[in-house]
Image (tube, rainbow, N blue to C red):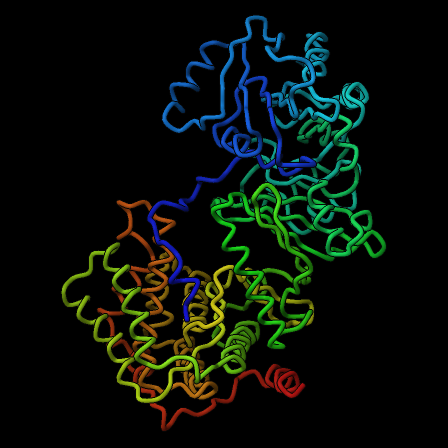
Length: 595
C-alpha cells in the first residue's frame, strides 16, 4: 500500500518554483543525444545546463571576455564538468577541427544580423558542423531583430535544409513551438490558450491573437526559431525524429500527424507536451508527455503503470479517462503518449456553488472510483497503522509540531488500529485538485495527470483533497483571497458547501463500507500526507509557511468546528446514501453505473 508515497524522498527545495530546466527549444531537435555542442555567445545557465545533458561536450565561445568571465565567476560552483569556455578574439574563428560538431547554437536574437555582417561566420559554422549537423538560432520578438524571411531561407538553403518555427512568448524562455508553415496548429494554440502570452496582463488575451494574425504586426513582434541543416529534414512538418521512432514502434505513422510543442510551467516537474493532430480530421488526437530531467522519470512511469492498471480493471473509458497509446525513453527521459480528451478547465465552467453540477460530477466520479476499486482483503488496520507511522516519522523530521499537536496526530494514527474490520484500500489519484479536472463538451468530468496515483491508496483522501481545493475556489469567487481563510469559511464553518462536504463523505463511506470511526484519522492524515508532498516545493527554511501544514494546524485547533463535528460523528451503523441534489446528473450517472 502507498507504494508511490513510501518510495518518495521528501527533500525540501528539490522542486522549487522558478527552478525550471531551460533550453526548451532543445526538444525540437531530431535527437537529444549529441557529442559536441558549440554555443556562439552566452546563453542562460538554465539553457547551458540542459545542453550539458544533451551533449557530451559543450563549448561556450564569445569575443566578449568580460561576459565570459562573469559567467565563469557566477557559475563556478555549479557549472557541469563537460562545459568549457573559449575566448574568440574576432568573434568569428571557431577553435574546432572541421566536421566535429553536432550542433551550433547562436545565442540571443541577432543571429541573422551576425551572419549578414560577417558572411565568414556562416562559412565557419558550416565548416565545424558534421555532415548531418544542425544550426539553431532565434530572431524576432519585441526586442530582437526583425524577421527576414528571405535571409532565413538563404541560411536554410546554405546548410542543406531546415525548418522555421513560431515561438511564444516574445521574450524569455521559449514555451511554445509550432512549425511556421502549420497555420492550423498555430490557430488552434491561439484559440485554446496553448501559448505563453508576451504581455501578462489580465484580459489582454486578444492582443496575442492580434499580433499573430495580423501580417504586419506579426512581422514586427513574432518570435521565430530556425533549425538548419540536412539533419533537420526529417522533422519538416512531422514530430522530432526521436518521437517518430517511438511512434513507429507503437504502430503509428508519424506522417499522419501535425504537431505543436508546449513546455510551460514554473516547476521542473512539469512535462514537455507534444500535441498530435490527425491530418485527416484536423482534430487533436494524442498528447505526448516527456520529462525534463531523468530524476523525474518515476512520476511519468507511475502514470503509465496506473493508467494501465485502471484499464485492466475496466475503470473509465475513452470519454472520461486518458487511454495509453505508447511509451518509451529517449536520452534517458521518459515519454508516454495518451489519447487527448476534449475538454476545458474545470475552473472555467464551475458555478462555484454548493450545488454546481460539475463539482457534483467530480465528487460522484471520485466516489465511484473508490467503490469500484475498494479492496478489503489486502491490508489489516495494523498494517495501515504501521505505514502511517512511518510517514508520521518523516513528517516530524521536517515539521516542528507542538507537543500537543504531535500527541493528537499520534492518537489519530493509533485510532486506525482499533478498527477490528479489515481496512479498505482504494485506487487513489493522489492529486485531484480542481486544476487537474476537465469538463467535456457533454458535461462529463475527466481527471488528468495520474503521476501521483496509488494503486493501493487510502480511502477518502482523494475526496477530501478535491473538496478542500473546491472550497478554496468557492471562497475565492466570493472575494476571499487567502486560501486558509477561504477553507475555514466554506469548509469548516456552517455554509451550503459544508453541508455538501458532510453529505459527500457520508455517501463515500457508505459506498465502500468504510467505518465512520475512521473518518477523523483519515481526515488528519490526509493533510499530513499533503504536507509531506508539499515539502519538496518549499525551501528548507520556509517549510512552516506551507499551505498544507498551516491547514493541518488549523484543523487541529478547530477540531470542534461545525463541519468537523458532523464529519467525525458519522458511524458505520447509520452510514447511508444521500440523494444528490442534481437529479438530471444523478440519472446520467445511474445509467453509466448500470453499463
